[in-house]
Length: 75
Image 1: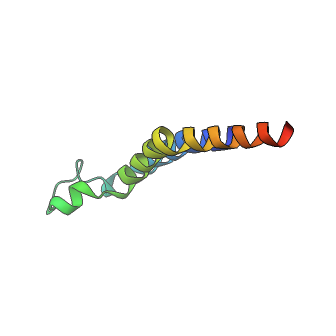
Image 2 (image 1 turned 90 degrees about the vertical axis):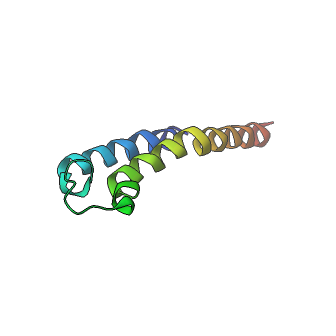
């Protein structure tokens, strides 16, 4: 369960580290010749978004389901 709960924060940290390590990928910093697509779909920020979505929407339900399955298996 701990591994599932840790995936979201680790993914978010990975996206932030990626943005710091490769700042040229973040269009907000370097605006030369960037279009709307470049502002909306920046790989490091998408990784952070995936981490947030997983942490808020997917992980809690997954952990709850796994805990319920463990309780059924024990009893």
